[in-house]
Image (cartoon, rainbow over all chains, first blue to last red):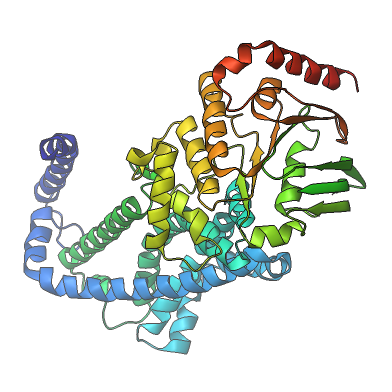
Length: 257
Length: 251
């Protein structure tokens, strides 16, 4: 098992090493100034020193994105439930949901910073706005995807509407909600970071802006790398949770891309 | 269980589609009745009306002398659909326990104990921990059967329960179903498009016309119980089959 994993990842490791080597050689041989393109060895050296502080900043961004996801996701699930149950609610709310989707949350960020200040609030709101639509769609389509035959059987046992919802519809929506989570999680991180660019005193977005202003490219690259690692970790965690909760779902039995 | 002058139509665009018209018949206590008819004659609609999942447009449906809603709330109806309709996230055992958990204040543990006994009866005890996707079609259908039987229903409603199975499992399942039914002595109403299945299982076979479905005749297979697969080679079986076929052709 472990051996197979190693064998599978060898080609990827090879290409990554080659790319780093090419970058290193290019930067050194053409004597690129550090403020334009630092050699990877320089970035690595900086990273080695800054892992604790970058980690702390990454946690700030992660918290903002997660809080936004929780906020946007729970509002969206609540409205999605209402829309899945009532056509009137759908007609009244769905166009608004689309409006939220079509308005780039990132474009609202300057306004939100103005309204909500430099703390975590505007970052959370931007992340929430980004997560909103995928969860609305996932909830509606998920709740409506329950197999009619199963609903009939459970109904024939005398189930109330509430029981039908809790025992059949909601679990049936879970795969759709996970799809929404997959899409939203990485977007929420990006949203939180962009909101940090516009005014923050902490977070990876703040680190990137500072490094940029100081022409400290090794720092900037280190922060970008930290963001990439954070995104991958979040993705892996969601994948693991999905395997655990949705092992019965056909999509979960095949490897995720 | 009795139907009196039951008709059902559905709105379709401007007009309406009439699925059933003037259907009257009854099922006595402990009787096994089959309804045969061409596809699209409203057979499944008939079962949904009796299960209380649909309301008739005219006429009256009574189960145990009360509207179907009462029987449903009292969990006297065991409904077995065409596809097994199991919950994919529940194990075999928990799918059977579902029958007991729904519409009852019964703990999962208590329900499981009873479900376990029922699983043993249908011969699936060793598969209790599996998930539906790990089972064959025939096994899934037996789980659906166990889920319906575990509530000790007074009336079994079977909607082409073996239609999705291959020929071999279908024939084996007929006699498994009969053996299980003889244990519980519930009334049973089976709808099917298989004449052989209807004759092999039922005391009475009702024949439905094409849409809108009406009862056009009735055959009584004079076959002794308990029945075994050999019954399908007897003269009485072939005669009953021919009678049903005649009714289907002679509308």
